[in-house]
Image 1 (cartoon, rainbow, N blue to C red):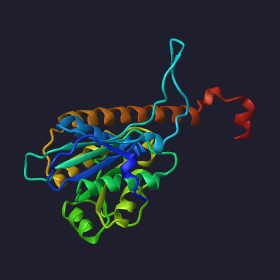
Image 2: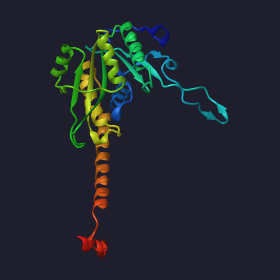
Image 3: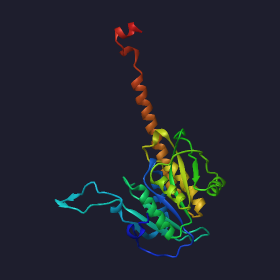
Image 4: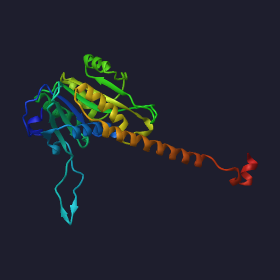
Length: 266
């Protein structure tokens, strides 16, 4: 179903050179949004288009300020574009503030419709790969593609071939719809420990962003993201140490605090 004429508001019509599209929504460890947000801050993107949110989201309520009811607010879903001054292709960035509670397939179709109108050559998404990695280890980046040629290219960039897996939510659904439309697509997944999925993971995001920059042939200063990753690693170590202390306190009890009856039973 092609909803682009009613679902997308075009704000600019730039001449783009064989653009790629990077799309991101919130997900596990917020990897995708950290990557997209960082790239958006570091490159000179301009407004391109927006998705009309009321077609895909229902407001859960309204805000009241000083006794005045405000208009319903919807999650923003916007396209931006960047003209690459280097040898790489231009880049379109799509960022969704939230994943739709329903109609995910329709929204993916609208985004693919817009991508084809903008003559996008390939679609990229990002996600987290939940593995047994420890939080002190450097995360690897997995790569999956919609065609064997894309998979081969990802392998040439030393991305891990993870075999069979599931990519949840819009970061995965968009690639499925891209495959239906015979449009090349790839997802880069940064490894995160299974016990930290509720925490933002700048370490995994840094690894993904660096691989993505190489694939897209864009130049980005990663110093800020590296600093954020180092701080996040320090916090995780602290959290792990505190959790271990609580574990020890809970499961150990000094002998002198035991009652006489308990000692006798032992």
